[in-house]
Amino acid sequence: MINLAWISRRTLLRGLGVSLALPWLEAMAPLVRLAGAAESKNPVRLAWLYVPNGIHMQEWTPQTAGPGIAFSPILKPLEPVADDLLVLTGLTADKARPHGDGGGDHARAMASFLTGCQARKTDGTDIRVGVSADQIAAGRVGTQTRLASLEIGADRGALAGNCDSGYSCAYSSTMSWRSATTPVPKEVSPKLIFERLFSTTPDGERAKRDARRKSILDFVQEDAGALQRQLGVEDQRKLDEYFSSVRDVEQRIERAAKLPPVQAPNVTMPAGLPGTYEEHLRLLSDLLVLAFQSDITRVCTFVHANEGSNRPYPFIGVSEGHHDLSHHENKSEKQAKIAKINTFHTTQLAYLLTKLKGVKEGAGTLLDNCLVAFGSGNSDGNAHNHDNLPIVLAGKGGGTVKAGRHLRYAKETPVTNLWLSMLDRVGGNVDQLGDSTGRLPGLEG
Image (cartoon, rainbow, N blue to C red; front, side, top):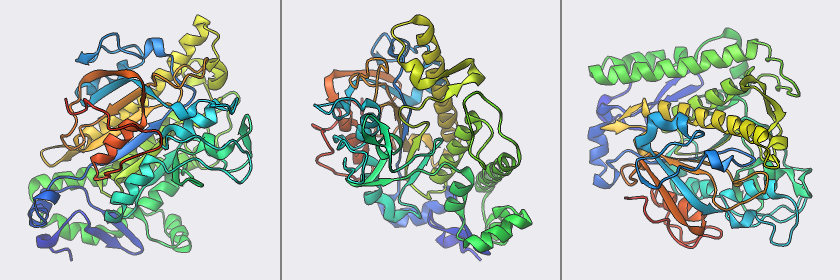
């Protein structure tokens, strides 16, 4: 039985082969205060979300800078969370440029995005780029959580082969790098991500549990019931909401496994994944929220689609491939379709941020204690530009970021300066990251 006097963020509900972390509860406050003022705040979580092929920048960039974001058409879906956003203009991924290496802008864009390093041009086993910002964060705070980091995405990726003008597929499908030569593959299956977050069951036992079609909540119900009887009314409500979210994700994963995929031109959905791309992204978003809410991890990367992705979007009226359209040749009809794809992705970002904002934590929300960076290593996909990147930073970093603004930075300001500033919020204290030149000023207001 859980002793309420010693409940903390590391307390787990346990059952047969499973364990379930807890969200923030007011009952945890006394023990947290005993740990000292330096640890009395809710932890800051960091997430990086990536979209490929650049953005139609004319419909992305707000016309004015300063307080109060003048929402452009592509950013319009984010208007409900305006007070939680910074739109950052002028940042550059210099190491995504050729620097004498010729073609391969898509591979370099993703490989350099979080590393700030130039990828070695090879499609062999001698890949090399640099350590990514998320893995630096994982090295600083990963020992405090069950998972040091979580890497997820909606497109499977390969770690070998030629995917872009002589560059290994590892570069165009991997955002996270544990070392200069070690990419961290992302997981695309919501079911496997859920198991990784919440289950300690060996594969054989997991299969038996699946066969019995039981919820993970069924296995921890004794611990959960004992805990709820000791909690106050507000904490009981929070726990009920958390359990409901866990069960909702479980049920959607189960439905996705049963339903046939939606037929779409030129698209083959892998077996076991949700039938629609939108549902896939939203399930992944919900899992990210659960991982942060339960403090299973404080670091996540989320790739909406691999660089150079030629996925069509027929469900929003775009049947052509994304990459093909990104080479729009300044034709307005192609640019309009690119803008529709971009707006679809910002709509998914709005979904994630709204979910994070809906979770109460301490005196604020889970989003208040996050920094979620969303963007691409390309700006205009037609020109393969890597300056003036489309970047949004959401959340308030535990009160260290003043949101609700559009900030313009000097030309050629490295995007890695932003990553250094994010790392500072989790005690990263890193002097250099790739091509960084210092911290990004102005985030505090």
